[in-house]
Image 1 (cartoon, rainbow, N blue to C red):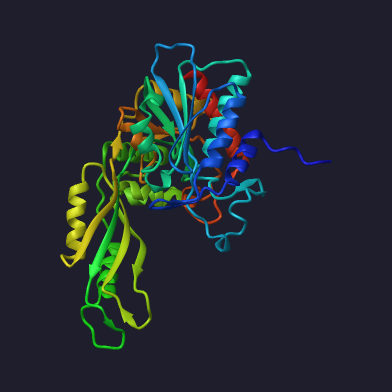
Image 2 (tube, rainbow, N blue to C red):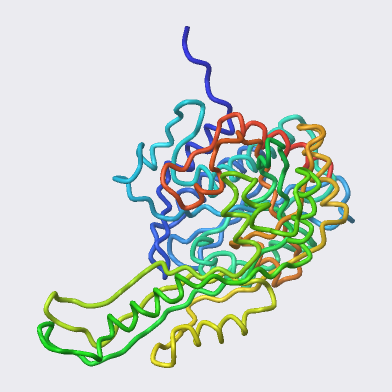
Length: 431
């Protein structure tokens, strides 16, 4: 017998993955135009009127508004991004842009971050509109460019130049929340109610250029290497916030373990341990080194890029500590900086998200958490919109889902996508 066709949410995710929208950062990107046009065509097929904004060639954003039954209620932004980080094909078990389904999972760059959610948004809205239904309030569906570069050529420009797209909106939902983790054989869902602050820094060390064979103590490469090693080996102290305290309390109640040792409690979460531990403290990870141009030439300058994610409110203290760590001979330059956010785990939308998960996975607790990374919710916050992470996925206990963000062999279970579509459609009908 012929194999059953894949669910529409999986087919849409496959189509989106096959657009290579790799974003290398710093303005170097393949561009999102074809993916945005695909999304726009899908929205138009539902009777919506998509609008495009391309402030930089090929960096395309698309939006459509779904009119709700109650025009007096504030609108809800439901958003995703269409770019992905690059993938080195030789490192993968499959072609990262072939969107292959294997062993019940969809493989490919973007399967986790975040073309899975893009597909869930589109098909959840389609379910509702094809049934002749309307949401309770206006939904603003937005798909941004350049999120993987901090949104500087995407959402930041959209909120600056097209604020009318978001007229009447007060809340938003997007990626990296609503997914399940397993802690001591107990499943729970994490609902993202905050994000750490972002600082992308460039370290610059200068020395004296010269011949590679000579005795040479003023070496910029040595200096930058020492600075990078010092930052990479620094273990930042735990600094809890209201959200991370609530997370620990929720995990403690779930497992019966003490919340006095956050790292030990996070270790009970198996594959999600590293993701949770990053929410308890600042992290500063070296990601790029750049120095030299010939084997026998000592260069005058060497640099490194550092990805720093900061507990909200501690940004200046962290910058001062980083300068102390690297010393006065190394300059620190800010490449991108963005805000941190925290909002209470309360209110009508939070209750609606918790209820939607409860209808599809009864009895499983939903716990707030602080995202160690960032999303386009930061840009929306600049125009007064409160953002949450809610891309609902019921995941197998042994799948290292959080480890696949920007990782190799990124993949998501087909059943999880179907679950997420149903939960999201339920939420959009009722919130």
